[in-house]
Image (cartoon, rainbow over all chains, first blue to last red; front, side):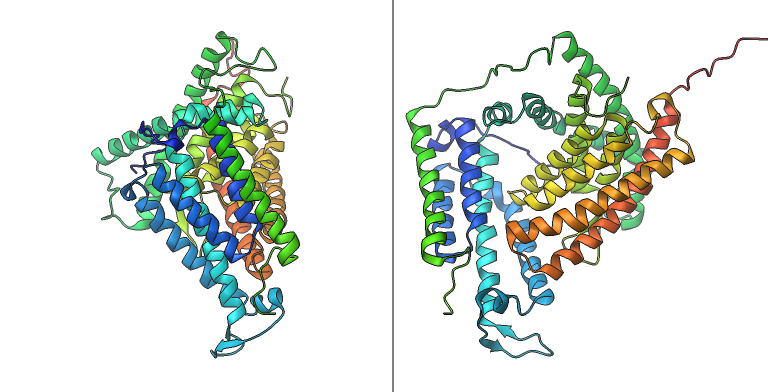
Amino acid sequence: MRIGLFTAQKADSFVHRLSGITKLICFLVLTGAVMFSYDIRVIICVMVFSFIVLKISKITFSQIKLMLIYVVIFLAVNAMLTFFFAPGYGTEIYGTRHVFLKLFGNYDVTSETLFFIVTKFMKYASVIPLGMIFLLTTDPSELASSLNAIGVHYKAAFAFALTLRYFPDIQRDYKDISQAQQARGLEMSNKAKFWDRFKRALSIILPLILSTLDRIETITNAMDLRGFGKFKKRTWYRRRKLTKEDIFALLISLVILTATIIISVFINHSRFYNPFI
Amino acid sequence: MKKLFKVTTKTIVATGLGAAIFTLLFMFVKIPSPIPETSFQTAYGLAGMFAVLFGPIAGGLIAFIGHGLSDAIQYGSPWWSWVIASGVAGFIYGFAFLKTKVEEGIFTWKDILTFNIIQIIGNVIAWIIIAPLLDIVIYAEPVNLVFTQGAVACLMNCISAGVFGSLLLWAYSLTKTKKGSLKKGE
């Protein structure tokens, strides 16, 4: 229940100094490049690059340990699922079939499927550091202004800002209600059966939602009184001007994206890199 | 008068706070299912409730922001195809906004039926059409895998929105005073 969301540390590094807009665009451009490409060489380059940036941004291992564990479990399960649902998927993509290891039925491990799964694993693994850098070094209120800057309507950006602002509050409310229930004798810890715990968690949600609906009224009134939404545009207190460092970071990201697309179009002639032909 | 796509300050605030609860439920109040990478998410019940109370824009954004944010917190990066599908599902739930009067304390069996037909349509479109197709286009996942996951997710989200969403709406309607509930003394 303890999640330090967007614990934007106040450390000072090259990445921290970049404006939110730059970081948002770089994140979208770089993840877009990795999403697009199934070329393992490109993916490994981006991965090395993102680990270097992770190093520059002074993020410590303990900050990302929990996330890494989640991700590795998720990716391992995904890899196994892909194999069990489509053992011949590699052949479908690459057009050749080299049996690597014979198993029962048509579950032969082919080099093609193995190569596809490894590529996919690297692909997702290389996005993770980028996400972590973005989440851990960006100030939440700057994020909303950045979303607005790249064309998201300010009302939607504001809704997102409110989510970030009230998530810790709601998490705290949930904990308070849960402890109140426990004080009345309802077991919520691991000692209770899973199903009982689930039912009790549900009984916490109703008071949580009803109190939130009241809070919505209060916040709405406060915002209406301050004239929210009267105009088509708004200004942001936390918006920063782009500096030379920002332009430099943007250029690097764009170069990586362009290179990815050029490699796919002119060298691989598809999104996949085929070493089997 | 209620309008389907009108965005008032209240819609924005409801979206923000709704997405925060959605994120919380999505991460902590769920039952894992036998098919990996899918689970019974109570969050869709909440999305259903907020969509009925505040309309399609709020419903769609709540599911979109909530799902994206919880993915980002847990995995570092959102799984875009499913995040978008979530948004579409929430958006379609919202079409029950004009058809029900929960704010006036009225939530009858007929309203439950209306809400459930709409949420089932929304879930089918989102999880059997949009999520698998985007998985194939964006992530090049194997076809039978994504359709199996989609079908399981669809079924579980229908139950979540149907049972849990209806219950939440019913409980909320009880807290509202009905129109004309005061009678002149004899």
